Length: 303
Length: 336
Image (cartoon, each protein chain N blue to C red):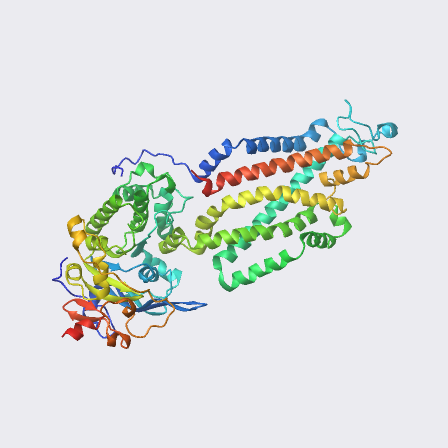
């Protein structure tokens, strides 16, 4: 035991569980590689088109170059080649990346916000309310998610579908179910922990208990799940693009277009390979980061 | 301290005269939990009263309902029946809002020092939280440091997190949190059970010291008779949701009346190996009845080495067989 002292000025800084997790994450080489790769992809997609002063759309097609510039293989002037309209494929891949990453981010954010609120209400108040809320989730779970997404997408008009909002909404609506289940399970166990009861004995209200005591302790799991949701959402959008229900120019759209121009007569391989490589790299990186986070935040692996 | 002052009785509705001095009074408390397999009678009619400045030890084996008593008193569990009176005010069944001002008088220390502190909060925010809740005080650094010194922790460690402390230190943090609002009564729910024996003694001495310095009143819950003996003025023994014996500490250890208390006492190891080898131990046979089972007669009958016919039919009431010595057993009546 330490001697009681009256030295109020001296403060030893403690290491929080987040500090610990960060230290463990830094030791995980694979997830650091993933994080660096992800950062590169994000930076290139975000700022690449701006720097290159290029645009994917038809506006800068110079009339006289159009027939000659179409379907060029990768070269010094067009690193990723061009498409059938003579547009730089590098620019298209990068701009497609912007939208794919944005969809991953926003749909995940939406699913986390809805899921955390829904799950914590169900888990915290429990009883009949929990029963009703979770049966609703089960019901939505029972419907094949692809079917659900397609249904939601079809509720919007073609004009609306030109903006990415419907796809954010549709993917968020599907993804929050799992988040809600995870959060509810966490809250359910945390609710009976002694520190929550101690807070109640202290006179803390429900809001304080939920926001100060319960949610901070579920955050680790939510962060891990969210990191793994981003690639899932991006992939899901790619499927939708394949079906012609995607959100405009994304990697999914490019891959599906690229696949359609692989034929025995002439194969424009670069139109399939480049978007696929970017998509795969991003998904790998996100999964590595997510796995690393899970190992870092899981208390059972604590030493 | 010793058996000379007897003022309280295990309150029943007929005895009220001497109880006004009691700081905490529990009357006819019942806590039943409905389960799919029947009703669990965790607490089944308990009367207790604690005088100001007293330490009442509450002993019993796991699952006898002693923790439920504490949790009901602080309002974590709602009682099925009965009254809980704190400093003259009935507090049973109050809403969280109505209960809040009373929290300043009544606090609790939990059993598990690892589970009772939020792992994501610093020690300063754990100990400072009561100030924030009750006084809206965001900056209570000075009080936090004082409290830490009071429980024997170095205030310079207040920015650390619970997982950086040992079990004994964590229990001190929990104690500092309970003391923050300067309560009159503290319920100690097995405060040392999870600690090493050497640390147990330190924490118990601290509890004793704080009680004297701050004029606290304790309800001390434990399953370890040696620990209770060290701490308590009076001791109540619980079995299956009821109190089976209640007496001053020295009296109950010297002259246990109830066979269950006798068995508990005989299970305490004696430090002297010679005596330990030769002393007689009462081994309880049989199983504890399932908590959902309806029991006819004395609840302890199935395991009691001294059970006789009457035990199978009559439920023994808690009676004052000797001055200040209460027991729920037919034996003393049979003897006289």
